[in-house]
Length: 281
Image (cartoon, rainbow, N blue to C red):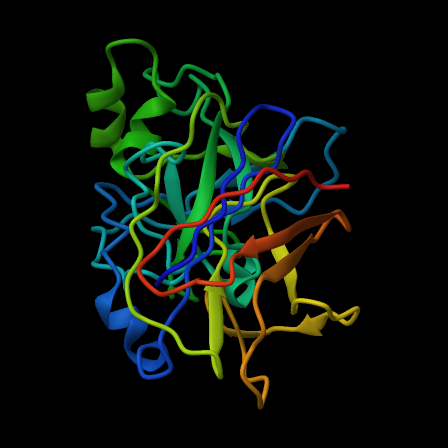
């Protein structure tokens, strides 16, 4: 991976991207850090009833079973145990993962004391960073990290709550996490060449879910669409050497757009991070 964009403060959107080598894209999943090391599994089943705005969806466990090892890196993210993710992450089944379009989407989750005495009832925000392939459990299935699972507990009871293994919870879609303070560099890997360009959106503001990425070359008025490769990876084979500096345009599923002009400089290379400040509009 190789290029990173990130954004600073609360009102600003954050974006981090990585560039893959032509030969590296097919093997990227094997090289990615294992991101979904859940200590517990949460199995959810959607109740078919209308809820008042802002309440979220009531969900219940479909069955109890031991957590199994999940395939890691479905979105291609890394460093999810550090800021801004801070391990508040979850795998999602297909209705949440959405063939990669759900990568980076944020959800508020909570459990209530009637389901478990250790539940705080306070909503916590988690980010979809990986996929869970179980298709038989329930329409909605969050496989939470141990940190995210325990965060739903009353103070001092996170360990007890994690021992439950499976919980009835409520969830709803929410806005993305707000970034504060200086941003760190994101580790990237691989290489790149002017004839093949692939980016992975690590974190985007707005509602967090990216549905389209476009690229514009230097001195060109035209935006070229990138195509989904896998997870959160977007790629383009332009058929000619790309002329830098390159601009990126990212659209979220809320219809908002972030444009990072000339974010990738003339001397861009693999194994490097690049930063910009931009906003969704």
